[in-house]
Image (cartoon, rainbow, N blue to C red; front, side):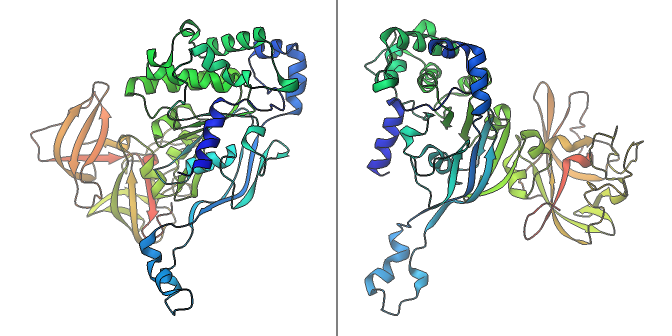
Length: 464
């Protein structure tokens, strides 16, 4: 990583910067410390809603793969060597356009290398975009230095000063304020104490980082970011260094803190459980390209493509090779759903038909439902995605699998099976504990919940 980038990150960990205004929802004490009452803050916040607008944001890095560019460099530009050996730029973020609403927590989600941290670094100013613009409210901050953007940034490694106490770590950015922004000792102490109370570490103020747990250290880092009264809070994989129990506890704390402060927050993670549990909206990315944006449950229930469907969900979605023939969906030789019985879940539908057995439904008919997975789909090969909770144990169910075993999880039962058409080595079905699986049988049969079944084009992998 280049040293200029590292120096910027370190500066943002401890350096105070100019804050344009107090934002809507900010804790009352921070207003009072500046000699303003709540009504003054409310009037100001109405004029300074902090939405973040990204317009066609693109970031390219030079390809430093020596092997791919070896021939062109050795022979020279005019040697006749094909340009195909010259390494192309790596596109980390590609034409990202999105408006992050004021006061919301947005999760940037995707596998390693998808561009989520690069997007966060572009918003913070640690990286300059190759093209595109970034707005904080009405302010174009594309070329503004990080220290002038009014951001709070929390890193994966906390970046606490080991020789300073918790109080001193929180106060550190306030002590660096200069000129008209300089605060008295009493003001800094009061603001640090309030930030500590907000993240519930006010009883640890005299300890040093080495005397704290990982979760407590992360709270100190968050308090230090909040005490500067940022316009925007940016969290870069903040829970990656914590164990499973602390991750669960700390993510709940992050959500509570964000709701209490009302700060527009961007949360980067590769963990879909984290993003879905605390985000108002999630942005799913792959190889620098945004795949889908929406509310977590809506994205889970209606994935735009096979990548999104596979990335979201624990246990992961079961994927099968399938076919639509004569208005029916086939997995292998099993006709698992009838086009006339598949309906979309919507507000007007009290119940949906299950496994080919029609039930009473209000609203749109199954045949005319826009959400019917096979209705209106011509005969073709498809990928079939079935959520683990989309299986219903039925002795006469249309979908037959080879039974491998049963795992009792307490609140539900996980049925493990195999199917020749399955892409996954194991088909995992989640059913209620009221079901009794005949483990002596070599096969298990299921009906399917139509709203948990998704069809994708075999070549493009886009949702049909």
